Structure formats: C-alpha cells, structure tokens
Amino acid sequence: MAETLKARARGARAPKAGAALDPRRRAQRRKRRLAVLFVLPAVLLLGALVVYPVLFSVGRSLFDASGEQFVGAANYMEIFQDPATLKAIRNSTIWVVVAPVLLTGLGLMLAVLTEKVRWATAFKLVLFLPMAVSFLAAGIIFRLAYEQNPDRGVLNAVVVGVHDAFEDPAAYPTARARENQGLTGKAGGPYATQDTVRPGGGSVNLGFVGVAPDAMPAGAEPAKADAAPGPDGIGGVAYLDFAPGGGGTQGKVDPAEKGLPGMTVEAVRDGKVAATATTAADGSYRFRGLADGEYTVRLPAANFAAPYEGVNWLGPALVTPAIIGAYLWVWTGFAMVLIGAGLAAIPRDALEAARMDGASEGQIFRRITVPLLAPVLTVVFVTLVINVMKVFDLVYIIAPGPVQEEANVLATRMWLVSFGGGNDQGLGSALSVLLLLLVVPAMIFNVRRFRRSGA
Image (cartoon, rainbow, N blue to C red; front, side, top):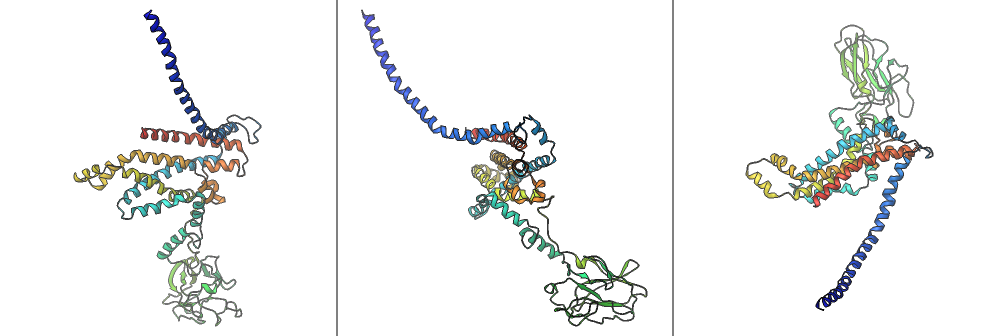
C-alpha cells in the first residue's frame, strides 16, 4: 500500500517538472527567433552585395567576352600572357612591397616623435586630416601638384626655384639668328659666323630675333653701331634686329634697336676657343690681344638653352612612385594614430627601468619599444597590404592617359578591361577573382589576429 502511494506521488510530481521546463524552452526559442529576425537583414545584404557578386564573377570568368561561350580557364591563362596585365601585376607587387613598409615606418617614427612634441594633439590632427579627404579629391590635388609646368605644379615650382638658385638660366631661350645675315646654326644654338674674320677687321654684328620686349633684360641699352676693337682684336655687337613699331633695315643696327647684354661670345680658331667675352649692356663685345690669323665668332648653345622645366613626375619612369607618394600623404596619419595608441599602452616602468640601467634612447627603441609594438605594427602592416591591393582611385585619376598603362595596377586593369574600352568582362572577372584570392589570405590573417588579441 505504501509503495503504491509513493508511485502515485512520483507520477504526480513528474508533470509539474515538465511544465516548469516548457516555459524555459519557449523563452529560448523566442530568443533564437528574435536573433534570427535581427540577423536576417544583414545576412540578406551580405548575400546580395558580397556572396552573389563573388559567385557571379567566378562563373562569368569561365566565359568569353560575349558571355555566351564557355572557355574554362582560358581567361586565367590570358592573365599571364597579356603584357599589359603582367605590367599591372608588377606594379601591384611594387605597391605591396613599398607602400605598407614605408607607411608603417613613417607611422612608427611620427608616433614616437609626437610623444616628445609639446603640441602633440594638434600635430596628430594635422597629419590625420588627409584621411578626411576622399581619394578622388586627393588624386585631383596631386595631379595638379605634379604638373610639369612650374607655373601650375607646386612641386616643379620648388624644384625649378632650387635649380635656378644654383645655376643661372639662359638669357635668351627663344632667340634665333636672323636668316641670311651671316650666321649659321639651328634653333637653340650654337650659332657661328659663316665667314672668318681677322683681327683688326670691321665690326662683326650678330642680329637676332624672337625675343619679346618684356623678355629683354631690364638694363638693356640701345645697340652700339660701331664696336671696332682695334688692330689686334675682333669686336662687334649682338643685338635684337627688330625695332618696336616696325621700320629699320634688316641686318643693320638701327637707333631704335637694343643690344643683347649678358651673351657669351667665343673667338674660335682651328676648332679651339681662343678667347671668350660677354656682351655689355649695349650688346657690344671685344676680343683683344689675338694672334694674327682667321677666326670664327661663335655663340654657344648655353645662351639659348630652354629654361629648366623641372621633373617629369608623371612620366613613364616616375608615375608609380609619384602615385605612391600621394597614397603616403593620405594614409600616414592612419598608421601614426594606430601605432600611437599602441605606444601609449606600453608600460612606462619598463622604459624607465631601461633608462636607469643606462640604456640609450636608440637601444630602448630597438629592444623594448619595437618588440612591444610588434602586434600593433603587424596589424597596421597587414591592413595596409589589404588596402594597397585594392587601390584604384589615385592611379586612375593621377596617371595621364598616355602613361596610364605604365601605372596600372590589378584594380585599374580590371576596370579598363571590363568597362574602360576593353569590353571583355570574362577577362575582367578573372582579374577580379585573382584580386580576391590575393586579398583573402591577408584578411583571414588579420581576423585571426584580432580574435587572438580579443581572447
């Protein structure tokens, strides 16, 4: 009888335990449904904006330009056979090797230096400001800065200014000899007299044209018509054979015509320079004390050399380094701020202990600061590698059309092949898949690193 009552009691208690568990299960199910409800929009967007385009690109890369004929791996084989695409791969390799290393090094150096600057916050703000500028705006800024014309390109204006400070520019770059007036030579010099002259002869006048009135030196005086040097010399006048307002006689020195001061004139005998003179304010020159013989009067090409135009930053040889320079300007602040945050987390007692032990600042930097910053430096470097592989805007905007192929990277080559005139979306899709395969390992490495640091 007692056992029967115990069995009935256990049976009565069992439904109560089950009833207590059901609300918990229902609550957990509601939480799961709510989580799925919140996550679903993100999953749908991820699928529509990432997964579907990737799968579509992989499939499209297996077809020809029209998208109708299946070609298998032919597009991938063409990547490594097309010279323009190989050049883009080479440039992308240069970017990956150079830009992240320079940026990480610059960021580390600036982060360390800003700790010793009184206005560190303002300094960091100024360096970080380019991050607020879009790549489109940065590309336009540097396209103007790299202009070949010194009047427009700020970099060449500086280069030309420094060059001209150490080397005087030619006085008359646009001058040319008056035709049929006894001078031979081509534009830009040198010019020489057709006939030889002996000491003690008449004046050897050298007429030029092509010099604008506002390009004449400020101290130029009216040309001296008679500059005979005497019995043992040769002389004459270099002048602008053009009278303002017209008039005058070609080949003759007229009162309204001005001399060309500052010209270098040489007396040449048997192919060797026997004497050198510089024209005076009135354009006159004289060679005295010459031995008897026949001489040719010559004006060296240095008188007519074109002005120094600076560096061709956007030429085939320098276009890629120039664009990398623009990229450094934009991203240096990013690297500095991240590394600076890691630097602020370094225990100061370790640095102070090293200083008390007699370590120099260089030793502290190499053996303590850098090793402790290694995780941050790695994250910055890998992040920049990922970003560099996808660079497009700066290359497309800064590089001029004639040298676009010399500056192309994988991203710009992909766009040009697909939409920029190539109209081969099969090859373009293959390039996009190649770019994805190159970026994914770096992304996985960065994600794992973040997870380890979070753990």
